Image (cartoon, rainbow, N blue to C red; front, side, top):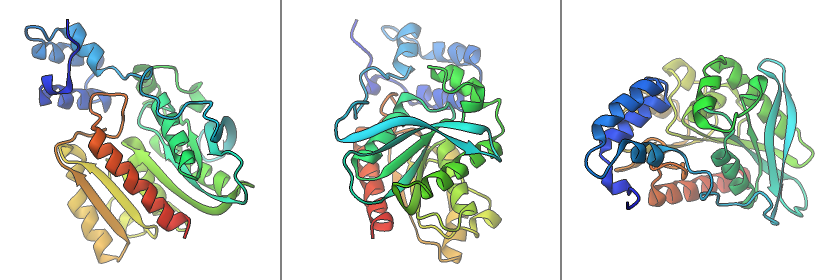
Length: 296
């Protein structure tokens, strides 16, 4: 049997997966509704396999890449979860202090995709710290389904404190020049927005398809923003007009990009929601943004 291709799959499958990935339906209901799309050669097991993240063949920067140094560290989050594990990566043989980037995971902990993004960030010439907000519960469990279930057990404001603590840890690190920005995905996009609200010295924020803060919170932002949205992501995009109005009214530097025809999660190259063209362009824009605001 030929492997499924993205173009073989109805948009309804991606919408259904979005509901499942964001805890709107449980796995039983997800499978039950997914079975409706199993027609002819497209079997239910094939659909389930197709929608499962592929962490075996999608890594873009090897863990032992000789151009970077990457290892796990622990830092303290006194207002959040206590001792937090994170992947700290930096260019190998770097001389002098460098700017830093906090890399914030989705709603499932520090999985291999986010670790890879952390290493990509270091390859681009930055320090990166990718924390695991599941640390108080034992850390990312090795699969996303269990990771989502674990993350639901934590308070999201306490998790936000974990990433704020990561910012302070990196800002004061001996390798860092004091300039620190953030990039985050889905849940991490919301965290990125909220870090911009709460950290007046944040050098910049790049939320990928992240929920927006309310109007009062948004008016507190000082950091420049680069906002990345999937054109088909109606759930998140619905909050953009109000957010844009506040950003514009308060002269907050911001640029928003909507990538037409792509889904929520389009940057994640481990799932079929991935869109290579949009993800590449969005990441190039992200690195250019960091070069502007962190290296100037």
